[in-house]
Structure formats: structure tokens, C-alpha cells
Image (cartoon, rainbow, N blue to C red; front, side, top):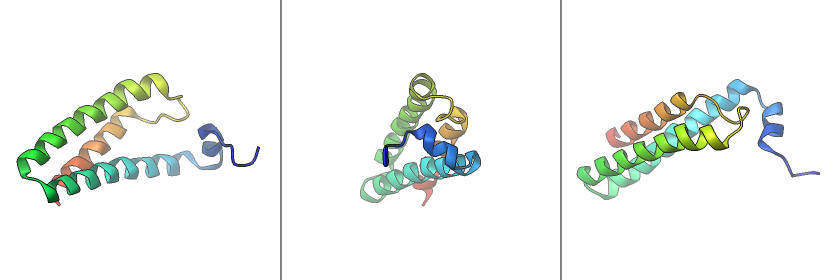
Length: 95
């Protein structure tokens, strides 16, 4: 069926390292963009609170949701994914 691809099918055609690198940029970039927006339009106090909430949400997503609901083909390193969220949050606060 044309156009009906599963994640596993896509990963077969894309090298694993490229997939992982893209995923890590996406984790850090998304967190950074969110935090930059919060920092730009609110106070530092609000940004720090949002950053803390984002870290907790990232931990739940990576260590519980991904562990239970993603296949091993989809899932990379949960710790690496979480750390990239953390890097993005810090960068978003600093920029």
C-alpha cells in the first residue's frame, strides 16, 4: 500500500545512526524552542518553573511511556533522549 508506512518500515530505509542523530536534535531543539518562547514572554521565575515541569514531563515520557509503549526498533537510549531534553531546556534558558 503506497503511503502507508510504519515506523519500522521507515527505519529499515534510514540508517540507525542518522535516525538517532535526527531524534536527538529534535529532542533538544523542541525543548530549546519552547523554553526560548517562555523566557521571551515571561519572567525568569516562570521560565524556571516551566523548565522544571518540562524536565518531569520528559522523564515520564522517556522512562515510562517509551519503555512501555515503543518497540525496541523505535526506541533508542532513554537516558540519551532525556539528557537531550535537559540540554535543550538549559540552552533555551540561557539564550
